[in-house]
Every structure is written in structure tokens, then in C-alpha cells.
Length: 119
Image 1: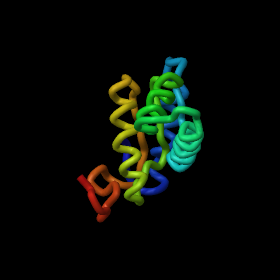
Image 2: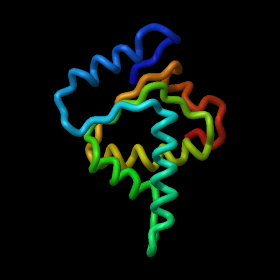
Image 3: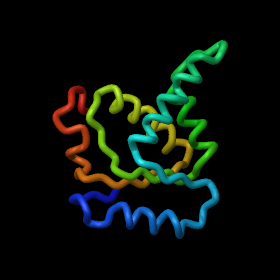
Image 4: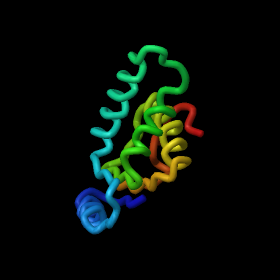
């Protein structure tokens, strides 16, 4: 987790890390784009005949089959629904052995700052 002020080189550092990472199944994405993809996958899964269970468990397992290292640029959590989704999704990704790397303008303690159900 790399954090700091705007314009100090976090994204550049992430780009260099990603470029030199000698892993085939890797993904680098802007966090907002990632969340759009997660919600798109969840919507498709819900439309699957016979759908049951925790949709984000299934999305997490799907993502884990695609990548072993997931790099997020500009991680931020401002919405309770996304906080809940991320809890389940990150638990699944980590349990499946995916390494998560993130950049953010906020220190970890300030993610979802002031949000409800923050634990």
C-alpha cells in the first residue's frame, strides 16, 4: 500500500513495478475502473440461470483465476456499499492467493473516513 500526496510519483512507481514484474497473470487498473468491472461481473452472474450464493465470492474466484497480482491505482472507498463489496471481494482474493498492491492519496486509517459500519 503506497500512499501520499498528489503528484509525488505513486503511479509512476506502480507502473515501474508492474512493468518489471515477471508474472504472467497480472493486472494493473485504476480503482474506479476495477469497481465498474466488478459490478458488471456481479450483474452478469446474477442473470445466470440457477444463480445462488454470494455473488462477490464468485466474482473474486473468477478474478483470481485471471490474475495472481492485482495492482490498483488510486484506491479510495467513499461508499458503504463499496466498502461491503470490497470486504468480501478482498477476503476472497487473498484466500485465493492473489497479491494486492495499491496506491492512494489517503493513509490506510483514512480509507472510508467517517463512513458508517467502518469496522
